[in-house]
Image (cartoon, rainbow, N blue to C red):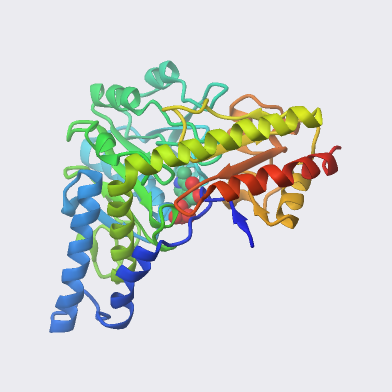
Length: 393
Ligand code: PLP
């Protein structure tokens, strides 16, 4: 039996999602853009899902653009909103983001740079928190878009978005927030309420598979009045903002996952934080008994850290060997970002936090979600002493 501690990479779909999705895979299967009765039935399901997702975010249904996931949502925000703001509001071709964003934001930002944009990348402190004074200096009334994530996937740090949104609002600048890791555990209605048509939070990315929905499904909430040029051109679905036949089943799954997470949030956050605290204390204890340095990375457990998130560096050990040994013992953890798992590069997040290249290559991340139990934490703590001993460099 595998003990799965990699929910930041993906969570298995919940039973309620699978049950909600099933009728839209086998019965209500028409194209929601078709005018016949089956098409209209699909459209009804789609619009119900959109309304449910909107209420979890605190936005209007018409502000929800359904996408194929977090990567597409982030790309649509950066490559769709920023140039549209330049065209509609006469702003400079200037984007500001942070050094710890997911590559789904950083790569589109690089694409803008290749197109001649000025892209400023703001640094972070030792816990991965964005440098607000530096951000404040870089964002001007002429800036087209700011993109800052809600919570980091590698180290779990929650960004001070009230401050970020406020400084954007003061300058009338649109702020995009990648909420892929926070959706489900943090209340996105609080995030959405930070913005206004004149500035601050203007767009929020969500991905279904991080909270028990299906992979390949997500949304970008775009505040009405925010200029957006579509990236996918075609049939003009999603009010011309994202072409392509909408996957109704995935949208139903996303809406179900969001509303179920909202209903359980208080209890689930306390449960995950309890498991995570025991995991962190246990890992540090095993490290000290084995005589090796184990350091928690990211913000200390508390409101500035995602409740189910634990991440460490193990200087002097091979993180890769630790992960392989844990895997052999049936415990699935990861080194950080699943998306860069194939790359030999040290984590750009840990480097931005000031860790050395060597230390940044020794990261181990254990992340918890809806299916996590005490037995998963016990399995990690039982397997860890051997894994640490075998991974000394
Ligand atoms: N943004 C963050 C912070 C993520 O953690 C991820 C996935 O790991 C993504 C974006 C990309 O989301 P998706 O896998 O749905 O494309």
